[in-house]
Length: 162
Image (cartoon, rainbow, N blue to C red; front, side, top):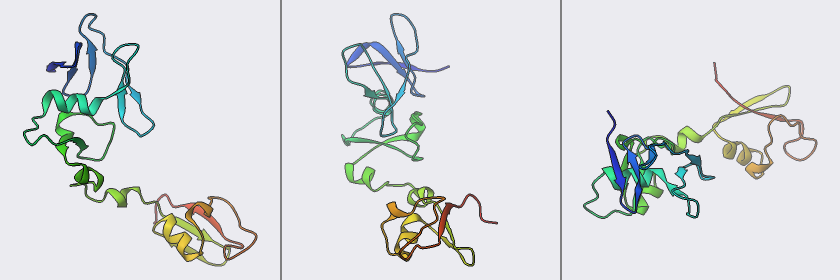
């Protein structure tokens, strides 16, 4: 059975250990929205700003004896607001992805460059751009280039290398 705790600043609402928010008067679970930065938010009332669910869960369920300012998602998934995935951290720890193994590696996407004769696989778009002496934004997938160092090359994301 889920444990619900009343949200201190909003006593008409409660939060559970998984990040669900409910209206205490109606018992209705509130709809969550994904903020443009990837975090789940909820509106508690009509004329209020959206609140981050991970902060509501952490404030309600996770002790913060050192008064740390930020909440970190341990597995790096901004939508996973279970208490076992959250912890209080300093701003610098949160910025550096403290404790996240291979977070940057996980986001890298391999690029295949082909010119009909030669194929080169790059570990990232940055590596590909460095090789072709251009900015990474100039590497467009599926495009065959007509001029410059990229002339005749086509780029694509590599799904799986066999």
